[in-house]
Image 1 (cartoon, helix red, strand yellow):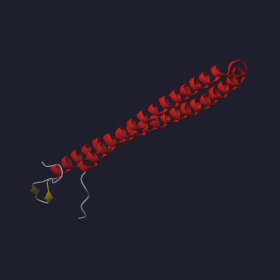
Image 2 (cartoon, helix red, strand yellow):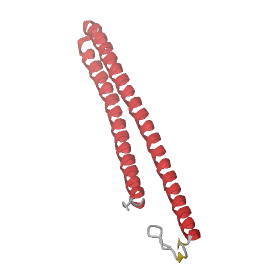
Image 3 (cartoon, rainbow, N blue to C red):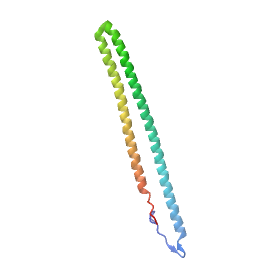
Image 4 (cartoon, rainbow, N blue to C red):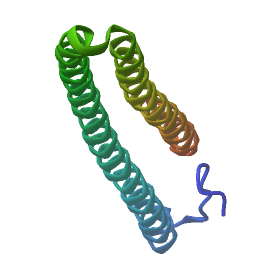
Length: 145
């Protein structure tokens, strides 16, 4: 029996009730199965989005911390440079350059991690959308009687 287009034998007073009931039970089971799959996918999607949001939040916080740390490192380096300039001017420039490179490296690393997370988010979202499209294409449309 085709799930979408059920065929039934006629009996004295219409269609065979047993066949109709069996067909309805089969449709109900398939619908319930699809609904569970949809709910599972939706739950997975929601969990992935929460996880991705948390990861983005963590990376954003890391970026902010790195930025603040970079500012502190630079400010400390400037203070040291001023003190060292009085003692030995040529050493101050070397310390500032090292501090800036460290700050840039910290920020660059955070941006790389953020980019990876954004790519993962896009990939997961695309996969979930493809799965939802496949799932929705298997659910028959209601045809008005």
